[in-house]
Length: 463
Image (cartoon, rainbow, N blue to C red; front, side, top):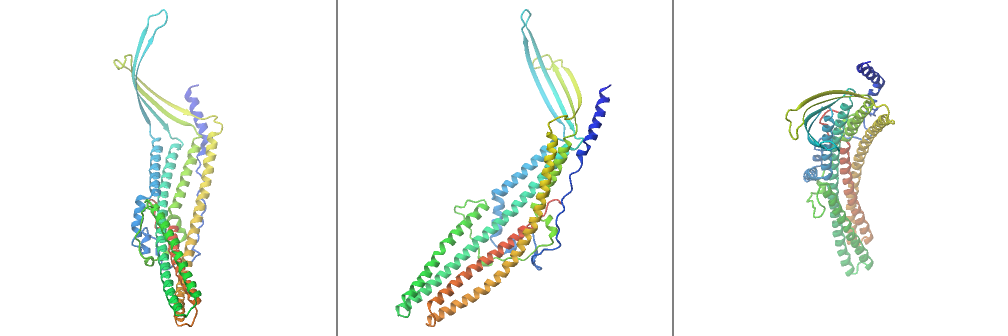
């Protein structure tokens, strides 16, 4: 029986037995698609754009974001990961092409057996070797698709890092401005307390009040003075955090900044929940990783099937040292069919591993979608709650300022004691500080909403 009559039936038999290995992986999971958001939304808000930070009316923030994009170590690391993924695609794609090698050699051999004359042998050779694996089952092509999907995931990861970095820079900058504003309010309240102390001391000198009143007001002044260092330390910490985000050393880093009151919290239109899947780079990354896992499953299944490789060689050989004089030419072509008969279950376990990995990524993708929907709901609720909190705090601030003016006037006229002034002063300081924090919460909530909605991100190619 000829070798052909044995090889080809065996080839088709193994193909039939392993054909089931090339079935496509399971389809994508069913994802939730709510018709609308539960939390209150801004009907007059603007759609999220790629330059969302302009909505805050900040003059300094764009420059900080540009500096962070240029110098941030996190973002530069993500850029390098994209470069590595591109190289991996090139490596995987190279497996689809033949390999060609060149060999050049020359040698000398001397034989000197007992009882015979010594002899020398010289050889020189020049050869080309060609190898090529036929990708019959698509294993190599699946490897390329996996590398390409991983490249997409790396690009989406870079976009995610960039969006997170932008949000971090904006948040740190808002924290700096809010802390400076709280420090300014504390300094104003200290000056107010010192002014009232001067009035109390003047009345004490005229015998209108007791030493207890003077002691109480001095205690209030000292308390307000002691509140300044924590604000100053917090400002330095926020500046240090902002410096690291922008890729700068914290030592000597300073931001001129602007008035905290000039910042605006823009209205944001969230759109439909169903559109969220195509607007967030982290969801696109999860989907790309799932596509890479699909290709890995196909590659692992294809590895169970026979491999077909072709090889060829051509060369020149001569009996001279370092010379190809009067060479003998040779040409060879060969084909090989290889099939693993026993490997201790390694290949089948590799298939099971890749399938389990894919199922894990399916659940990770589903969790990422659910988390994204939750983040938008939370941000919408926080925006609405902070808006109502600011309205309440502004009303409280107005009444607190009025109460202090009345208490101070009545104290000057002797119609009331110092305790009423102290209470009104303390209430006003707390109210003004809480109002600054409420405005910061509104800015942070709006910033979180921008991030949860993808920050105006759009994929370079359709998902």
